Image 1: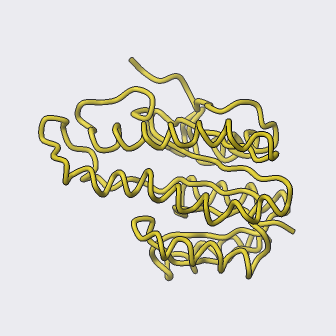
Image 2: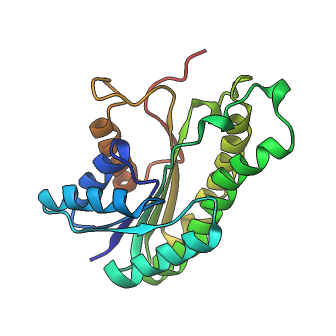
Length: 221
């Protein structure tokens, strides 16, 4: 049995994706800052017969991320699928003319150092398995920068570049890196961007392995 590791576990998309991959037979490692929150999510998944366990870590703290993913692999089995989809903080989204160099430290740590740390922790296990999937989830500013959301626009673009390079570099090793762009809000009643629809989309990206960038719906002008 292999593990689906979800970095940025939450009650919306995160829970839906954990449930979908768990239904496919994977154990689930839930990673977020709050241990109590993780216990609640794991208990909810257990009611759906999904084996899940929480591992507390802060995506802005590389050491805690590395420790959490290594502990998860030891406890639940090797990580075959890694999803990086934490929600950015509101203060990352300031107007570009009000953004200083210091204001970019946290967004870049969140969207660049965090993913790099997670990938480096998960890759040895994927290589040992001979397969793996790296899923990166971003908002529309990753492909269309928004002047009122400078931090995420800059940081998501950097994350996109990193993920694209992984896609090319790891393909010969049967490790698939892919990105899902979600341009708007995730809502239960959304046709293309509800948690359940997006969870199935992410599972399909993992299963079909057909290209790097995918869109939940068209990016608005």
